[in-house]
Amino acid sequence: DQPEIPQRPRAVAGFCVGEFAALVAAGVMTFDQGLIVVKARGEAMQRWVDAEDMAALAVFGLEEDSLQDLCVQARHYKDGHLPLSKQQVYISHFWGRLGCVCSGPTGAIHELQKLIADDTRSTSQVYVQQLEHHCHAGHTPL
Image (cartoon, rainbow, N blue to C red; front, side):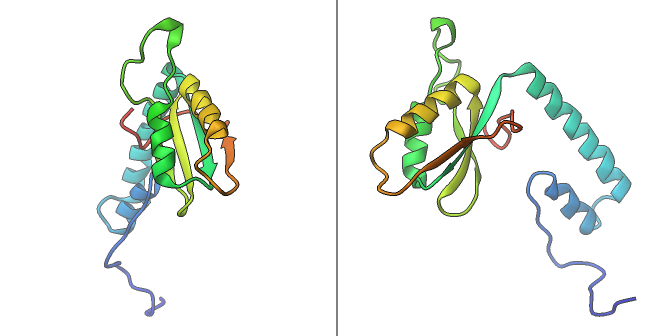
């Protein structure tokens, strides 16, 4: 009833669950199909969260290259054993030019927090906050 609003968009985009909203908006799937897929995705992610000890850390004020170097260094040796993969912590989200979320095993995230505190490359204030309700490493190779 509003002719100025297009009934079918030319392009849609989304991030995370927003990808499914974009698919519904584009007519690729119905709303009901989208609910089924989002529910199944949520259940699978919850099983992953329950099986892994993961954490996330918000970092603001550190250049991406510097943060990426620190992510590679942040390794947690559980019970004296080498980690399964060479890199354990990854940048999982970007929040503007100097804002990121890093995700990985909890011990490695704590190590990253220490590395950032000891890093002298940044000349500006660096803000770091563990995200208590973000306990997975989504959007990473993990």
